[in-house]
Length: 171
Image 1 (cartoon, rainbow, N blue to C red):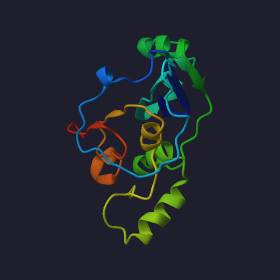
Image 2: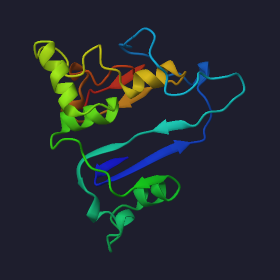
Image 3: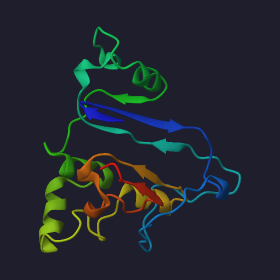
Image 4: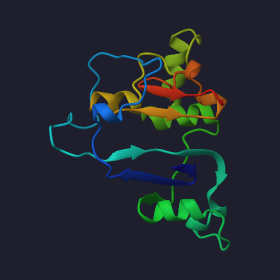
């Protein structure tokens, strides 16, 4: 979970992907020979599910899980109690598009801007040569699904790369 100044990462021990757990694919982006984030699945070895939830423009200092006196985030409090919380997370950029692009690629916004400019500033902000976390997870044997409501994270900007299912219909 990414907040302004706070990140919670959830690794849920729900098991590895299997044919019965697959998402119905819509517009899957295929990239050859991607370096995996981890070794591919081995038969009988369970891997944790990874859940990344981002919330745009949320003040971390107003969340009870970050020490605010009133109970303002009971669901997040419970979720964070069993997961990893980073209290000093800093956004790479003051704008959603560039900041979230850095989160899902691991690249600094200036590198992403340069790649976009070299493509003639047309098409998706995240071009086909930019590897995303979802693409690396797929290369490691994970099933992927993305659900977004922020227009900056629309598939037209390249944020759907690597997801077997990407729902941006509310964006």
